Length: 84
Image 1: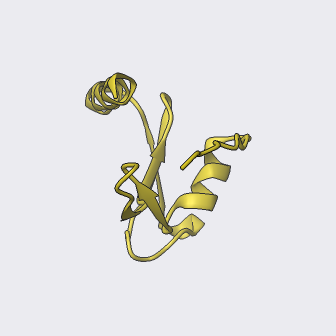
Image 2 (image 1 turned 90 degrees about the vertical axis):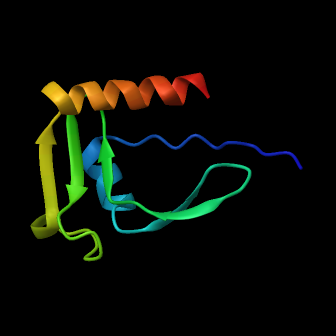
């Protein structure tokens, strides 16, 4: 099997959140485990669902600045992804 990754540019984190939050995606190639997306983040902001089963809406969206303990957690997760 040959896979080809198709790059899709996303203009900002809010757009990515609207496309993914509350939806099922598959992760952990090649085993493909189905997961529910409950948050997206970059190095500055984390957007997550307040009610994880409620789906994406502006009323169900929690915005957090990535600072302090959250920044340390984010950096640790990024490091783990880079090591894979």
